[in-house]
Image (cartoon, rainbow, N blue to C red; front, side, top):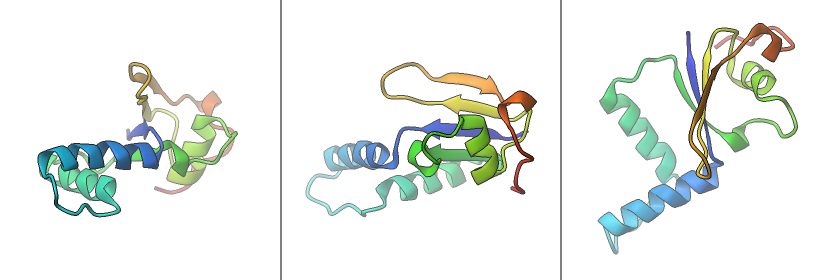
Amino acid sequence: MATFYLLPPRHSLDQAVGDLLARLLPGLPLPADAWDLVADRVAAAAGWPADTFLVPRDDLPDGEPVGDALAAAFGAEPGDRIVEVSAARSARAWVLAPADVSEPAAAR
């Protein structure tokens, strides 16, 4: 089963990584896509399973239930684990149930 980390919006992730790198490496220019670069490097170095997906919240359509949106856009299926991460509260993890997906999942 896959694990989907539903993260804060991309601009928040870019800002957080940019702030960290600016403190660690003052005066050096930062790439515009710092979040994507750091996430890719960490995933490769850590050896995360291939079925682990980091999904910024703004990559999902507005107004659609999370389960349906993850199924349509990323191929989530019943039984997959969803970890919702927020800067405002603790992470919430749940398993995607058949009732959480209204249509068949797209291919991963």
